[in-house]
Amino acid sequence: MSGQREVIHTRIWDEEPEADNPFAAAACYCRGYDVYGAMLGNARWSEYLYLLFLGERPAPAAARLLEDLAVALANAGPRDAAVRAAMNGGAGGSTAAACLMAALAAGAGQYGGAHEVYRALEYWKECGRDLESWRARLCNPPVEERADIWLPMEHPPGFDPHGASCPAPVRRTLDHLAARSPGPALPWLAAQREDLEAAADCPLAMTGVAAAALADLGLGPAAGEMLFLLLRLPGAAVHALEQMDYGWRRYPFFRDAVILTDDPGPAPPDSEERP
Amino acid sequence: MKGPRELLEHEDRWVTAMGKWFPGERTVFRGKDLHRACGRWDWMRLHVFGITGREYNAKEIALLNAIWVDTSYPDPRLWNNRVVALSISARSTGSMALAGALATSEASIYGQGPCIRTMDLLLRARRTTQLGTSVDDFVRQELETHRRVAGYGRPVVGGDERIPHLLARADELEIRSGTFVRLAFRIERALLEGGWKFRMNYAALAAAFCADLGFSPREFYLFTFLAFLAGMVPCSLEAGTAPEGTVFPLGCGRIAYAGPGRRAWERPVEAAVE
Image (cartoon, rainbow over all chains, first blue to last red; front, side, top):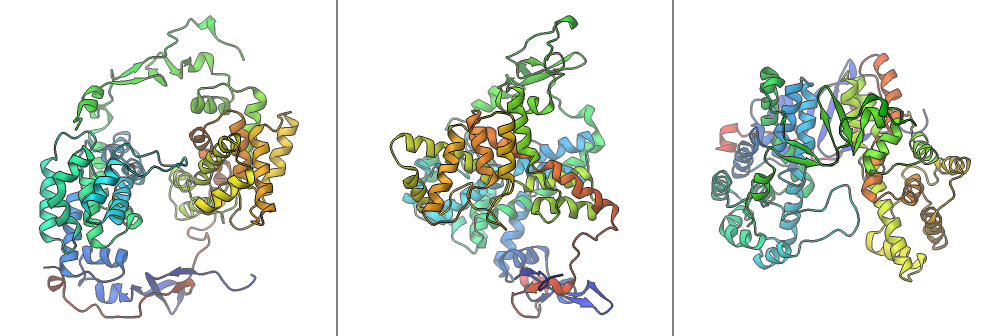
Protein backbone atom coordinates (compact mmCIF):
# COMPACT_ATOMS: atom_id res chain seq x y z
CA MET A 1 0.00 0.00 0.00
CA SER A 2 1.45 3.34 -1.00
CA GLY A 3 0.31 6.72 0.25
CA GLN A 4 -2.98 7.58 1.90
CA ARG A 5 -6.01 5.37 1.41
CA GLU A 6 -8.45 6.64 -1.19
CA VAL A 7 -11.81 7.84 0.08
CA ILE A 8 -15.29 8.52 -1.26
CA HIS A 9 -16.05 12.22 -1.18
CA THR A 10 -19.68 13.01 -0.39
CA ARG A 11 -21.87 15.80 0.94
CA ILE A 12 -24.80 13.41 1.31
CA TRP A 13 -23.89 10.59 3.66
CA ASP A 14 -21.79 9.97 6.70
CA GLU A 15 -21.38 6.88 8.86
CA GLU A 16 -19.98 5.91 12.23
CA PRO A 17 -18.67 2.35 12.50
CA GLU A 18 -19.72 -0.29 14.99
CA ALA A 19 -17.05 -0.80 17.62
CA ASP A 20 -16.43 -4.40 16.54
CA ASN A 21 -16.49 -3.97 12.75
CA PRO A 22 -15.24 -1.04 10.64
CA PHE A 23 -17.39 -2.27 7.73
CA ALA A 24 -20.67 -2.11 9.64
CA ALA A 25 -22.31 1.24 10.31
CA ALA A 26 -23.57 1.96 13.81
CA ALA A 27 -25.10 5.26 12.72
CA CYS A 28 -25.89 6.73 9.30
CA TYR A 29 -26.41 10.43 8.69
CA CYS A 30 -28.09 11.84 5.59
CA ARG A 31 -27.23 15.50 5.13
CA GLY A 32 -26.59 15.62 8.88
CA TYR A 33 -29.80 13.87 9.99
CA ASP A 34 -29.61 10.56 11.85
CA VAL A 35 -31.45 8.25 9.44
CA TYR A 36 -32.14 5.28 11.72
CA GLY A 37 -32.04 7.19 15.01
CA ALA A 38 -34.30 10.14 14.15
CA MET A 39 -35.75 10.06 10.62
CA LEU A 40 -37.13 6.54 10.57
CA GLY A 41 -40.71 6.78 11.77
CA ASN A 42 -40.70 10.58 11.59
CA ALA A 43 -39.91 11.31 7.95
CA ARG A 44 -42.15 10.60 4.99
CA TRP A 45 -40.75 9.05 1.85
CA SER A 46 -41.27 12.30 -0.07
CA GLU A 47 -39.39 14.27 2.59
CA TYR A 48 -36.50 11.86 2.53
CA LEU A 49 -36.40 11.88 -1.27
CA TYR A 50 -36.36 15.68 -1.29
CA LEU A 51 -33.62 15.71 1.33
CA LEU A 52 -31.54 13.29 -0.71
CA PHE A 53 -31.86 15.25 -3.94
CA LEU A 54 -31.88 18.81 -2.64
CA GLY A 55 -29.93 18.67 0.58
CA GLU A 56 -32.52 20.21 2.90
CA ARG A 57 -35.82 19.20 4.43
CA PRO A 58 -38.70 20.32 2.26
CA ALA A 59 -41.25 22.90 3.27
CA PRO A 60 -44.68 21.24 3.55
CA ALA A 61 -45.80 22.50 0.13
CA ALA A 62 -42.68 21.15 -1.58
CA ALA A 63 -43.06 17.75 0.08
CA ARG A 64 -46.68 17.66 -1.04
CA LEU A 65 -45.73 18.62 -4.60
CA LEU A 66 -43.14 15.85 -4.76
CA GLU A 67 -45.60 13.34 -3.35
CA ASP A 68 -48.31 14.31 -5.84
CA LEU A 69 -45.81 14.25 -8.72
CA ALA A 70 -44.79 10.76 -7.65
CA VAL A 71 -48.42 9.64 -7.81
CA ALA A 72 -48.84 11.17 -11.27
CA LEU A 73 -45.72 9.45 -12.62
CA ALA A 74 -45.81 6.11 -10.82
CA ASN A 75 -47.51 4.22 -13.62
CA ALA A 76 -47.71 5.34 -17.22
CA GLY A 77 -49.76 2.24 -18.03
CA PRO A 78 -49.09 -0.86 -20.15
CA ARG A 79 -48.96 1.02 -23.48
CA ASP A 80 -46.01 3.18 -22.42
CA ALA A 81 -42.66 2.21 -24.00
CA ALA A 82 -40.81 1.91 -20.68
CA VAL A 83 -43.55 -0.14 -19.07
CA ARG A 84 -43.78 -2.32 -22.16
CA ALA A 85 -40.04 -2.86 -22.12
CA ALA A 86 -40.38 -4.14 -18.55
CA MET A 87 -43.35 -6.27 -19.59
CA ASN A 88 -41.25 -7.85 -22.35
CA GLY A 89 -38.92 -8.94 -19.58
CA GLY A 90 -41.82 -10.25 -17.56
CA ALA A 91 -43.49 -12.11 -20.42
CA GLY A 92 -40.24 -13.93 -21.22
CA GLY A 93 -39.41 -14.68 -17.61
CA SER A 94 -36.43 -12.33 -17.24
CA THR A 95 -35.05 -11.42 -13.85
CA ALA A 96 -36.59 -8.61 -11.82
CA ALA A 97 -33.59 -6.36 -12.37
CA ALA A 98 -33.61 -7.05 -16.12
CA CYS A 99 -37.24 -5.92 -16.26
CA LEU A 100 -36.38 -2.66 -14.53
CA MET A 101 -33.21 -2.21 -16.60
CA ALA A 102 -35.37 -2.62 -19.70
CA ALA A 103 -37.77 -0.01 -18.33
CA LEU A 104 -34.90 2.35 -17.67
CA ALA A 105 -33.49 1.79 -21.18
CA ALA A 106 -36.73 2.72 -22.92
CA GLY A 107 -37.76 5.25 -20.29
CA ALA A 108 -34.46 7.07 -20.68
CA GLY A 109 -35.39 8.29 -24.13
CA GLN A 110 -36.24 11.62 -25.66
CA TYR A 111 -39.77 10.67 -26.68
CA GLY A 112 -41.78 10.49 -23.48
CA GLY A 113 -38.74 9.59 -21.40
CA ALA A 114 -36.27 11.01 -18.97
CA HIS A 115 -33.96 12.69 -21.44
CA GLU A 116 -36.93 14.59 -22.80
CA VAL A 117 -37.44 15.88 -19.25
CA TYR A 118 -33.74 16.79 -19.18
CA ARG A 119 -34.18 18.78 -22.39
CA ALA A 120 -37.35 20.45 -21.10
CA LEU A 121 -35.54 21.46 -17.91
CA GLU A 122 -32.87 23.06 -20.11
CA TYR A 123 -35.68 25.11 -21.67
CA TRP A 124 -36.84 26.20 -18.20
CA LYS A 125 -33.29 27.15 -17.30
CA GLU A 126 -32.87 29.12 -20.49
CA CYS A 127 -36.31 30.71 -20.87
CA GLY A 128 -37.72 30.93 -17.35
CA ARG A 129 -41.19 32.44 -17.51
CA ASP A 130 -40.58 34.60 -20.56
CA LEU A 131 -43.13 33.64 -23.18
CA GLU A 132 -41.22 35.25 -26.03
CA SER A 133 -38.09 33.27 -25.11
CA TRP A 134 -40.13 30.07 -25.12
CA ARG A 135 -41.69 30.91 -28.46
CA ALA A 136 -38.30 31.69 -29.97
CA ARG A 137 -36.75 28.49 -28.63
CA LEU A 138 -39.71 26.31 -29.60
CA CYS A 139 -39.66 27.68 -33.13
CA ASN A 140 -35.87 27.54 -33.44
CA PRO A 141 -34.64 24.84 -31.07
CA PRO A 142 -30.92 24.65 -30.34
CA VAL A 143 -29.08 22.27 -32.63
CA GLU A 144 -25.94 20.44 -31.52
CA GLU A 145 -23.51 20.56 -34.41
CA ARG A 146 -21.61 17.50 -33.21
CA ALA A 147 -22.75 13.89 -33.35
CA ASP A 148 -23.76 12.61 -29.93
CA ILE A 149 -24.85 9.42 -28.21
CA TRP A 150 -28.31 11.02 -28.13
CA LEU A 151 -30.04 11.41 -31.46
CA PRO A 152 -31.23 14.92 -32.30
CA MET A 153 -34.58 15.87 -30.74
CA GLU A 154 -37.43 15.37 -33.18
CA HIS A 155 -40.05 17.39 -31.33
CA PRO A 156 -40.22 20.20 -28.75
CA PRO A 157 -39.36 18.64 -25.38
CA GLY A 158 -42.33 18.41 -23.05
CA PHE A 159 -44.84 18.27 -25.87
CA ASP A 160 -46.43 15.31 -27.65
CA PRO A 161 -45.57 15.18 -31.36
CA HIS A 162 -48.43 12.74 -31.98
CA GLY A 163 -51.01 14.55 -29.91
CA ALA A 164 -54.21 16.07 -31.22
CA SER A 165 -55.06 17.93 -28.00
CA CYS A 166 -53.83 17.96 -24.44
CA PRO A 167 -55.20 14.78 -22.81
CA ALA A 168 -57.26 14.97 -19.63
CA PRO A 169 -54.71 13.26 -17.33
CA VAL A 170 -52.06 15.80 -18.39
CA ARG A 171 -54.43 18.74 -17.90
CA ARG A 172 -55.66 17.43 -14.56
CA THR A 173 -52.14 16.82 -13.32
CA LEU A 174 -51.06 20.28 -14.41
CA ASP A 175 -54.08 21.96 -12.83
CA HIS A 176 -53.69 20.03 -9.59
CA LEU A 177 -49.96 20.62 -9.23
CA ALA A 178 -50.13 24.24 -10.38
CA ALA A 179 -52.71 25.05 -7.69
CA ARG A 180 -50.43 23.71 -4.97
CA SER A 181 -46.92 24.39 -6.21
CA PRO A 182 -44.66 26.56 -4.09
CA GLY A 183 -42.78 27.49 -7.26
CA PRO A 184 -43.65 29.71 -10.22
CA ALA A 185 -43.17 27.31 -13.15
CA LEU A 186 -46.31 25.18 -12.86
CA PRO A 187 -48.76 28.12 -12.45
CA TRP A 188 -47.09 29.89 -15.35
CA LEU A 189 -47.26 26.76 -17.50
CA ALA A 190 -50.95 26.34 -16.66
CA ALA A 191 -51.62 29.94 -17.64
CA GLN A 192 -49.56 29.85 -20.83
CA ARG A 193 -50.29 26.28 -21.94
CA GLU A 194 -52.33 27.13 -25.01
CA ASP A 195 -49.86 29.75 -26.25
CA LEU A 196 -46.97 27.35 -25.77
CA GLU A 197 -48.85 24.55 -27.52
CA ALA A 198 -49.47 26.86 -30.45
CA ALA A 199 -45.77 27.71 -30.65
CA ALA A 200 -44.76 24.06 -30.33
CA ASP A 201 -47.51 22.94 -32.70
CA CYS A 202 -48.07 20.02 -30.31
CA PRO A 203 -50.07 19.58 -27.13
CA LEU A 204 -48.40 19.54 -23.75
CA ALA A 205 -47.26 16.10 -22.59
CA MET A 206 -46.80 14.62 -19.12
CA THR A 207 -43.04 15.12 -19.55
CA GLY A 208 -43.67 18.87 -19.82
CA VAL A 209 -45.73 18.91 -16.63
CA ALA A 210 -43.08 16.81 -14.86
CA ALA A 211 -40.32 19.16 -15.99
CA ALA A 212 -42.17 22.19 -14.63
CA ALA A 213 -42.80 20.40 -11.33
CA LEU A 214 -39.16 19.40 -11.08
CA ALA A 215 -38.14 22.99 -11.83
CA ASP A 216 -40.44 24.20 -9.04
CA LEU A 217 -38.82 21.69 -6.71
CA GLY A 218 -35.49 23.28 -7.54
CA LEU A 219 -33.99 20.45 -9.59
CA GLY A 220 -31.76 21.04 -12.60
CA PRO A 221 -31.72 18.94 -15.78
CA ALA A 222 -29.43 16.16 -14.52
CA ALA A 223 -31.13 15.65 -11.14
CA GLY A 224 -34.58 16.03 -12.69
CA GLU A 225 -33.77 13.38 -15.28
CA MET A 226 -32.61 10.99 -12.57
CA LEU A 227 -35.66 11.52 -10.35
CA PHE A 228 -38.05 11.12 -13.28
CA LEU A 229 -36.44 7.74 -14.10
CA LEU A 230 -36.84 6.68 -10.51
CA LEU A 231 -40.44 7.79 -10.04
CA ARG A 232 -41.66 5.86 -13.08
CA LEU A 233 -40.35 2.48 -11.99
CA PRO A 234 -43.28 1.30 -9.82
CA GLY A 235 -45.62 0.83 -12.78
CA ALA A 236 -42.93 -0.92 -14.80
CA ALA A 237 -42.33 -3.30 -11.92
CA VAL A 238 -45.91 -4.36 -11.35
CA HIS A 239 -46.78 -4.69 -15.03
CA ALA A 240 -43.70 -6.89 -15.50
CA LEU A 241 -44.76 -9.03 -12.56
CA GLU A 242 -48.25 -9.32 -14.00
CA GLN A 243 -46.95 -10.47 -17.39
CA MET A 244 -44.81 -13.08 -15.66
CA ASP A 245 -48.08 -14.55 -14.44
CA TYR A 246 -49.92 -14.25 -17.74
CA GLY A 247 -46.96 -15.67 -19.70
CA TRP A 248 -45.77 -15.07 -23.24
CA ARG A 249 -48.74 -16.75 -24.92
CA ARG A 250 -51.06 -14.00 -23.75
CA TYR A 251 -48.68 -11.15 -24.57
CA PRO A 252 -48.73 -9.40 -28.01
CA PHE A 253 -46.21 -10.82 -30.49
CA PHE A 254 -47.33 -8.76 -33.50
CA ARG A 255 -47.33 -11.99 -35.49
CA ASP A 256 -48.31 -10.48 -38.83
CA ALA A 257 -47.05 -6.94 -38.28
CA VAL A 258 -43.54 -7.17 -39.76
CA ILE A 259 -43.45 -6.46 -43.49
CA LEU A 260 -40.08 -7.26 -45.04
CA THR A 261 -39.08 -5.21 -48.08
CA ASP A 262 -35.73 -6.85 -48.80
CA ASP A 263 -36.41 -10.58 -48.92
CA PRO A 264 -34.23 -12.98 -50.91
CA GLY A 265 -37.02 -15.51 -50.57
CA PRO A 266 -36.82 -19.17 -49.69
CA ALA A 267 -33.85 -20.87 -51.36
CA PRO A 268 -33.26 -24.54 -52.09
CA PRO A 269 -30.57 -26.14 -49.92
CA ASP A 270 -28.13 -26.54 -52.85
CA SER A 271 -27.99 -22.77 -53.39
CA GLU A 272 -25.76 -22.16 -50.35
CA GLU A 273 -23.11 -19.50 -50.82
CA ARG A 274 -19.63 -20.68 -49.98
CA PRO A 275 -17.08 -18.43 -48.30
CA MET B 1 -50.85 19.76 -34.94
CA LYS B 2 -50.43 16.61 -36.91
CA GLY B 3 -52.18 14.41 -34.36
CA PRO B 4 -51.90 10.61 -34.20
CA ARG B 5 -51.72 10.01 -37.97
CA GLU B 6 -48.28 8.38 -37.88
CA LEU B 7 -49.25 6.19 -34.95
CA LEU B 8 -52.36 5.02 -36.77
CA GLU B 9 -50.30 4.27 -39.87
CA HIS B 10 -47.90 2.14 -37.87
CA GLU B 11 -50.41 0.28 -35.76
CA ASP B 12 -49.69 -3.45 -36.26
CA ARG B 13 -47.48 -2.54 -39.20
CA TRP B 14 -43.68 -2.36 -39.15
CA VAL B 15 -42.09 -2.10 -42.60
CA THR B 16 -38.44 -3.11 -42.55
CA ALA B 17 -35.49 -3.87 -44.78
CA MET B 18 -33.44 -5.12 -41.85
CA GLY B 19 -34.76 -8.59 -41.44
CA LYS B 20 -37.36 -11.04 -40.25
CA TRP B 21 -37.70 -14.46 -38.70
CA PHE B 22 -39.95 -16.84 -40.61
CA PRO B 23 -40.74 -19.28 -37.77
CA GLY B 24 -39.54 -22.80 -38.42
CA GLU B 25 -38.32 -21.84 -41.89
CA ARG B 26 -35.61 -19.21 -42.26
CA THR B 27 -34.34 -15.81 -41.17
CA VAL B 28 -33.47 -12.85 -43.35
CA PHE B 29 -30.64 -10.57 -42.16
CA ARG B 30 -30.36 -7.30 -44.09
CA GLY B 31 -31.40 -8.90 -47.36
CA LYS B 32 -29.48 -12.16 -46.92
CA ASP B 33 -30.59 -15.57 -45.78
CA LEU B 34 -28.85 -15.70 -42.40
CA HIS B 35 -28.14 -19.43 -42.38
CA ARG B 36 -27.46 -20.04 -46.06
CA ALA B 37 -25.62 -16.84 -46.99
CA CYS B 38 -23.97 -15.83 -43.72
CA GLY B 39 -23.73 -19.07 -41.77
CA ARG B 40 -20.01 -19.48 -42.39
CA TRP B 41 -19.04 -15.86 -41.76
CA ASP B 42 -16.98 -14.79 -38.78
CA TRP B 43 -19.25 -13.25 -36.17
CA MET B 44 -17.43 -9.90 -36.49
CA ARG B 45 -18.14 -9.82 -40.22
CA LEU B 46 -21.83 -10.38 -39.57
CA HIS B 47 -21.86 -7.79 -36.78
CA VAL B 48 -20.25 -5.12 -38.94
CA PHE B 49 -22.57 -6.01 -41.82
CA GLY B 50 -25.47 -5.62 -39.39
CA ILE B 51 -24.27 -2.16 -38.40
CA THR B 52 -23.29 -0.81 -41.79
CA GLY B 53 -25.05 -2.95 -44.39
CA ARG B 54 -21.66 -3.21 -46.07
CA GLU B 55 -19.43 -6.25 -46.45
CA TYR B 56 -15.78 -5.85 -45.56
CA ASN B 57 -12.93 -8.10 -46.67
CA ALA B 58 -11.02 -10.42 -44.36
CA LYS B 59 -8.18 -7.99 -43.70
CA GLU B 60 -10.55 -5.17 -42.86
CA ILE B 61 -12.50 -7.43 -40.52
CA ALA B 62 -9.20 -8.46 -38.91
CA LEU B 63 -8.37 -4.79 -38.30
CA LEU B 64 -11.79 -4.15 -36.79
CA ASN B 65 -11.26 -7.24 -34.64
CA ALA B 66 -7.91 -5.83 -33.49
CA ILE B 67 -9.63 -2.57 -32.45
CA TRP B 68 -11.63 -4.62 -29.94
CA VAL B 69 -8.80 -6.95 -28.91
CA ASP B 70 -6.37 -4.15 -28.08
CA THR B 71 -8.78 -2.52 -25.64
CA SER B 72 -9.95 -5.66 -23.82
CA TYR B 73 -8.50 -4.93 -20.38
CA PRO B 74 -9.49 -7.33 -17.59
CA ASP B 75 -8.79 -4.84 -14.81
CA PRO B 76 -11.52 -4.24 -12.21
CA ARG B 77 -10.22 -0.77 -11.41
CA LEU B 78 -11.56 0.51 -14.72
CA TRP B 79 -14.95 2.05 -13.98
CA ASN B 80 -17.05 -0.08 -16.31
CA ASN B 81 -15.21 -3.28 -15.39
CA ARG B 82 -15.68 -2.47 -11.73
CA VAL B 83 -19.44 -2.55 -12.33
CA VAL B 84 -19.02 -6.18 -13.38
CA ALA B 85 -16.78 -7.04 -10.43
CA LEU B 86 -19.01 -5.29 -7.87
CA SER B 87 -22.14 -6.87 -9.34
CA ILE B 88 -20.72 -10.37 -9.20
CA SER B 89 -19.19 -9.72 -5.79
CA ALA B 90 -22.71 -8.74 -4.69
CA ARG B 91 -23.80 -12.06 -6.29
CA SER B 92 -25.87 -10.56 -9.07
CA THR B 93 -26.13 -12.50 -12.32
CA GLY B 94 -23.50 -12.46 -15.05
CA SER B 95 -25.87 -10.97 -17.60
CA MET B 96 -26.91 -8.22 -15.24
CA ALA B 97 -23.30 -7.43 -14.42
CA LEU B 98 -22.24 -7.28 -18.06
CA ALA B 99 -25.31 -5.38 -19.25
CA GLY B 100 -24.80 -2.79 -16.52
CA ALA B 101 -21.13 -2.48 -17.39
CA LEU B 102 -21.77 -2.15 -21.12
CA ALA B 103 -24.33 0.59 -20.49
CA THR B 104 -21.84 2.29 -18.18
CA SER B 105 -19.30 2.29 -21.02
CA GLU B 106 -21.43 4.92 -22.74
CA ALA B 107 -19.56 7.46 -20.65
CA SER B 108 -18.42 11.02 -21.30
CA ILE B 109 -14.74 10.67 -20.32
CA TYR B 110 -14.17 7.29 -21.96
CA GLY B 111 -16.00 4.78 -24.11
CA GLN B 112 -18.78 5.57 -26.49
CA GLY B 113 -19.31 9.23 -25.68
CA PRO B 114 -15.82 10.25 -26.80
CA CYS B 115 -15.91 7.66 -29.61
CA ILE B 116 -18.82 9.21 -31.48
CA ARG B 117 -17.49 12.70 -30.82
CA THR B 118 -14.06 11.69 -32.11
CA MET B 119 -15.35 10.31 -35.38
CA ASP B 120 -17.47 13.43 -35.75
CA LEU B 121 -14.43 15.61 -35.10
CA LEU B 122 -12.41 13.88 -37.80
CA LEU B 123 -15.19 14.30 -40.34
CA ARG B 124 -15.59 17.98 -39.45
CA ALA B 125 -11.84 18.50 -39.57
CA ARG B 126 -11.76 16.97 -43.02
CA ARG B 127 -14.64 19.11 -44.28
CA THR B 128 -13.22 22.28 -42.77
CA THR B 129 -9.68 21.78 -44.03
CA GLN B 130 -10.99 20.93 -47.49
CA LEU B 131 -12.55 24.40 -47.49
CA GLY B 132 -9.14 25.95 -46.84
CA THR B 133 -8.87 26.20 -43.05
CA SER B 134 -5.56 24.92 -41.71
CA VAL B 135 -5.52 22.01 -39.24
CA ASP B 136 -3.90 24.33 -36.68
CA ASP B 137 -6.74 26.84 -37.02
CA PHE B 138 -9.34 24.07 -36.85
CA VAL B 139 -7.82 22.79 -33.61
CA ARG B 140 -7.71 26.27 -32.14
CA GLN B 141 -11.36 26.87 -33.04
CA GLU B 142 -12.36 23.51 -31.61
CA LEU B 143 -10.69 24.30 -28.29
CA GLU B 144 -12.27 27.75 -28.19
CA THR B 145 -15.74 26.37 -28.91
CA HIS B 146 -15.73 23.07 -27.02
CA ARG B 147 -12.73 23.41 -24.65
CA ARG B 148 -11.50 19.98 -25.72
CA VAL B 149 -10.60 18.05 -28.83
CA ALA B 150 -12.38 14.70 -28.77
CA GLY B 151 -9.96 11.81 -29.13
CA TYR B 152 -7.01 13.69 -27.66
CA GLY B 153 -5.96 13.49 -24.01
CA ARG B 154 -6.78 10.58 -21.70
CA PRO B 155 -7.87 10.14 -18.06
CA VAL B 156 -5.26 8.72 -15.65
CA VAL B 157 -2.30 8.82 -18.08
CA GLY B 158 -1.19 10.96 -21.00
CA GLY B 159 -0.01 8.48 -23.62
CA ASP B 160 -1.83 5.48 -25.01
CA GLU B 161 -0.07 2.12 -25.12
CA ARG B 162 -2.69 0.66 -27.47
CA ILE B 163 -1.78 2.87 -30.40
CA PRO B 164 1.50 1.22 -31.51
CA HIS B 165 -0.12 -2.22 -31.35
CA LEU B 166 -3.03 -1.22 -33.53
CA LEU B 167 -0.70 0.48 -35.98
CA ALA B 168 1.47 -2.64 -36.08
CA ARG B 169 -1.56 -4.82 -36.75
CA ALA B 170 -2.63 -2.52 -39.58
CA ASP B 171 0.87 -2.83 -41.03
CA GLU B 172 0.74 -6.62 -40.81
CA LEU B 173 -2.58 -6.56 -42.63
CA GLU B 174 -1.09 -4.21 -45.24
CA ILE B 175 -3.78 -1.64 -44.50
CA ARG B 176 -2.19 1.67 -45.31
CA SER B 177 -2.90 4.83 -43.35
CA GLY B 178 -5.74 6.54 -45.16
CA THR B 179 -6.88 10.13 -45.21
CA PHE B 180 -8.36 10.04 -41.73
CA VAL B 181 -5.48 8.23 -40.04
CA ARG B 182 -3.07 10.81 -41.45
CA LEU B 183 -5.43 13.59 -40.37
CA ALA B 184 -5.63 12.15 -36.83
CA PHE B 185 -1.83 12.33 -36.52
CA ARG B 186 -1.78 15.80 -38.04
CA ILE B 187 -4.27 17.00 -35.40
CA GLU B 188 -2.05 15.54 -32.68
CA ARG B 189 0.91 17.43 -34.11
CA ALA B 190 -1.10 20.66 -34.16
CA LEU B 191 -2.03 20.17 -30.51
CA LEU B 192 1.50 19.38 -29.37
CA GLU B 193 3.09 22.16 -31.43
CA GLY B 194 0.45 24.54 -30.09
CA GLY B 195 1.54 23.64 -26.56
CA TRP B 196 -1.64 21.83 -25.49
CA LYS B 197 -0.02 18.50 -24.54
CA PHE B 198 -3.05 16.44 -25.57
CA ARG B 199 -1.75 13.28 -27.15
CA MET B 200 -3.88 11.21 -29.47
CA ASN B 201 -5.79 8.49 -27.63
CA TYR B 202 -6.99 5.14 -28.86
CA ALA B 203 -10.46 6.40 -29.77
CA ALA B 204 -8.95 8.81 -32.29
CA LEU B 205 -6.94 6.12 -34.04
CA ALA B 206 -9.79 3.60 -34.00
CA ALA B 207 -12.19 6.25 -35.31
CA ALA B 208 -9.71 7.24 -38.01
CA PHE B 209 -9.33 3.67 -39.26
CA CYS B 210 -13.10 3.24 -39.24
CA ALA B 211 -13.61 6.57 -41.02
CA ASP B 212 -11.20 5.36 -43.68
CA LEU B 213 -13.39 2.26 -43.98
CA GLY B 214 -16.40 4.50 -44.61
CA PHE B 215 -18.06 4.30 -41.20
CA SER B 216 -20.34 7.14 -40.14
CA PRO B 217 -20.14 8.46 -36.56
CA ARG B 218 -23.24 6.48 -35.56
CA GLU B 219 -21.92 3.32 -37.19
CA PHE B 220 -18.67 3.73 -35.27
CA TYR B 221 -20.62 4.36 -32.07
CA LEU B 222 -22.57 1.14 -32.54
CA PHE B 223 -19.40 -0.75 -33.46
CA THR B 224 -17.67 0.28 -30.22
CA PHE B 225 -20.51 -0.93 -27.99
CA LEU B 226 -18.91 -4.32 -27.33
CA ALA B 227 -15.29 -3.17 -27.51
CA PHE B 228 -14.68 -3.69 -23.78
CA LEU B 229 -16.72 -6.86 -23.35
CA ALA B 230 -13.88 -9.40 -23.60
CA GLY B 231 -12.05 -7.63 -20.78
CA MET B 232 -15.15 -7.53 -18.62
CA VAL B 233 -15.89 -11.23 -18.48
CA PRO B 234 -12.65 -12.20 -16.67
CA CYS B 235 -13.38 -9.50 -14.08
CA SER B 236 -16.51 -11.42 -13.20
CA LEU B 237 -14.79 -14.77 -12.69
CA GLU B 238 -12.61 -14.10 -9.67
CA ALA B 239 -15.26 -11.82 -8.20
CA GLY B 240 -17.50 -14.88 -8.25
CA THR B 241 -15.01 -17.25 -6.67
CA ALA B 242 -13.69 -14.83 -4.01
CA PRO B 243 -15.84 -14.57 -0.85
CA GLU B 244 -18.93 -12.47 -1.46
CA GLY B 245 -18.55 -8.75 -0.95
CA THR B 246 -14.75 -8.74 -1.11
CA VAL B 247 -14.16 -6.64 -4.26
CA PHE B 248 -12.67 -3.37 -3.01
CA PRO B 249 -14.64 -3.28 0.28
CA LEU B 250 -14.80 0.10 1.98
CA GLY B 251 -15.00 0.64 5.72
CA CYS B 252 -17.04 3.45 7.25
CA GLY B 253 -13.85 5.45 7.67
CA ARG B 254 -13.41 5.64 3.91
CA ILE B 255 -16.28 8.09 3.61
CA ALA B 256 -14.96 11.66 3.47
CA TYR B 257 -18.09 13.57 4.43
CA ALA B 258 -18.25 17.26 3.63
CA GLY B 259 -21.93 18.01 4.15
CA PRO B 260 -23.90 19.74 6.92
CA GLY B 261 -23.09 18.88 10.52
CA ARG B 262 -25.28 16.77 12.77
CA ARG B 263 -28.78 18.19 13.19
CA ALA B 264 -32.05 17.08 14.73
CA TRP B 265 -35.10 15.88 12.78
CA GLU B 266 -37.73 17.23 15.07
CA ARG B 267 -41.11 17.96 13.60
CA PRO B 268 -43.54 15.06 13.42
CA VAL B 269 -44.41 13.89 9.95
CA GLU B 270 -47.99 15.22 9.95
CA ALA B 271 -46.85 18.75 10.74
CA ALA B 272 -44.21 18.57 8.03
CA VAL B 273 -46.42 17.42 5.19
CA GLU B 274 -50.06 18.28 5.81
